[in-house]
Length: 248
Image (tube, rainbow, N blue to C red; front, top):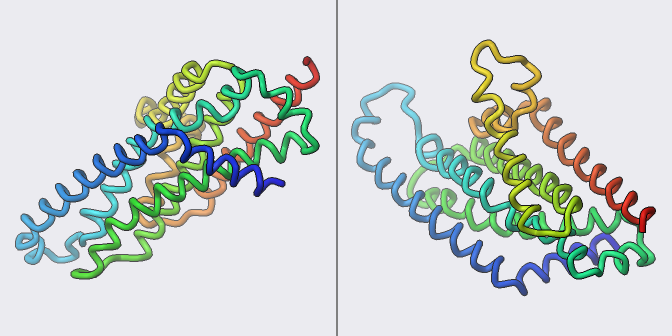
């Protein structure tokens, strides 16, 4: 039943013009960023050849592309998550959904997986850009894979937080704005602590755990952070809907 809900959610996204507009905007912006970075790499390639242990194309092209992607999708993900549950509330179909012969956990996880399928489509289109460089140069596939994993975990965390914020209101715009505010706060948390900032604030920052993966450093604590973040917000969403069902 979870996969059925996920497939339905995934198909419904492509029925909306918003999803196609988002895909087009993302591809145009990132393609421009990618080509600009490639052009810069070629312009300094002669200088890099004189350096020992010079950064390669993965460091100078692929990694910046993934970092730019994370920033752009931080702004766009609230638009994708805002309708997941809030639209059901606004259309008064949430009661029918909650009374269906499936558990609330299955509904929440199904909707979440449907969004992850859509995110996977976006990531495949993005990763294809640096992979195309392998035709004419050598890529550090381990570092590229680590960065792609970090980006996927980051977007999965964005989705979980957005899903929860969508369950709190029947207004998609409010859900989008609150999601963006929350994600931006968690992204910038470590930038405002400085050297004297507490370890707790540093640990709670999304960027703190994304940056090592982007550099090719696979740390189990960073992966565990994202998994706990995702599970935590999914559990909060389930609890929120259970409370609403009891109150209705």
